[in-house]
Structure formats: C-alpha cells, structure tokens
Length: 67
Image: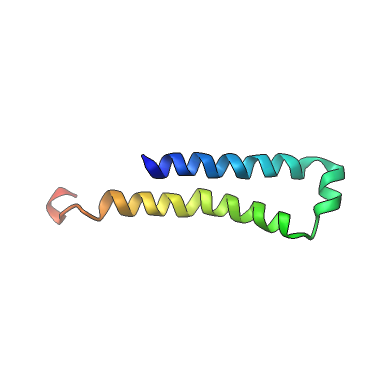
C-alpha cells in the first residue's frame, strides 16, 4: 500500500507539471528546458518504477507453492 500511495503522490506531481506545460505561453517559455525532462521523468518513475517495486515486494517473499 505504501507504493500505491507513493504512486498517487508522484503521479499528482506529474499531472500538475503536465497542466502547466499545456498552457501555451508557459510551454513556449519552457520548451527545450529541464522542466520538460523533469515532467517526463516524473511520469515514468510514477508509472513504472513504483509498480515494479510494488510487484517485487508483493511477490518476492512467496514460495513457489503459493503461486
């Protein structure tokens, strides 16, 4: 559950930066900057890395008989 809450928080931050990038004047100022790179990484980390950590924590302690 900790990784689910972490995913929601991370995806909220990514969503807020995405809304900021959808405004044309702000996007014009930030295009080609590290802000766009940070937004991309927030989405990737929030979507993939937290899911991989949650899956590893969920399935690692199980024995082969439980699968």
